[in-house]
Image 1 (tube, rainbow, N blue to C red):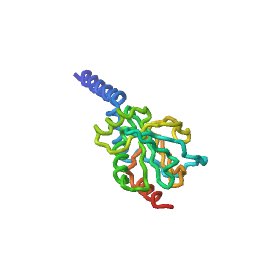
Image 2 (cartoon, helix red, strand yellow):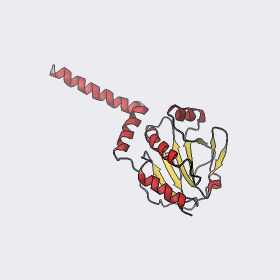
Image 3 (cartoon, rainbow, N blue to C red):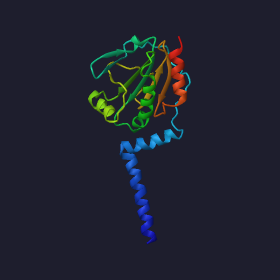
Image 4 (spheres, rainbow, N blue to C red):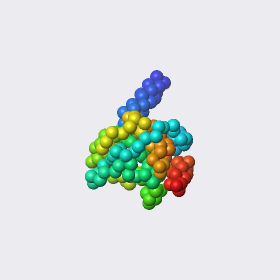
Length: 190
């Protein structure tokens, strides 16, 4: 009887591990839980980056509207690269959505959520199904590797002068007070 209980417990643990590994929502749930207890906080430190022009880096929304980052000078840009199949992306979405809701009416802050797969239909449905309000875009030009190297999720914040102010690869809790204060500081600066 003892042998049977031990095997059942082992089987249950293996099954749980397999679910976490192969089910994106289960993995996202686990990562989200870790974010809520304090893991996955982005460091706010000015990255060392070469001066670069944002002109010509373009994104298209579901309505066909093009946005060129170079045209957004004078605004803080919150740029997030993600994909619907990415568990860390799914894990950080609730916090990113909360941050977006806080700043969506701030004319000094622009949010761009770039679907790395470029499937606007799928990503728009994903957002709608989860009741997220974030505007979805697809990449319409080359993006320099200093901005996006292919790691998902990647979040970049540019200040009003178009300078790289934050770059974070991996999941993070963007509803954290440090990020909110950081965006407020950037949006109020000249």
